[in-house]
Amino acid sequence: MTGVQTCALPISYEKVLREGKETVIRELEQQAARMGANAIVGVDIDYNTVGANGSMLMVVATGTAVVL
Image (cartoon, rainbow, N blue to C red; front, side, top):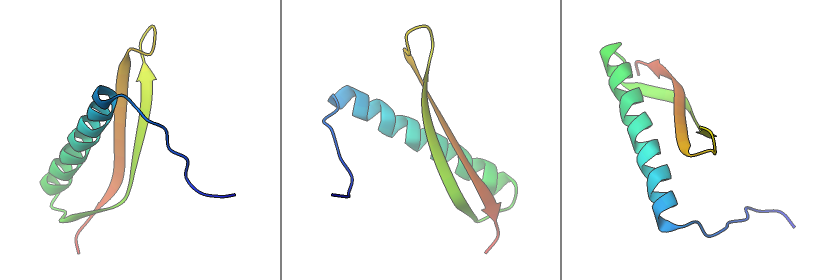
């Protein structure tokens, strides 16, 4: 059997993930605009926990700024 398996996450954790994603996408868009780009391709978003007990979430977005 193939497919995506999901699990229920606490609402607060889902909120933190969503806010982290929105923040890095917004920052990626702003940086691309400063470079004169009007689009970003190949966007990759990575999530990692850091800190003594994994108490902090690090969200990193990368992509290529382009002019279409």
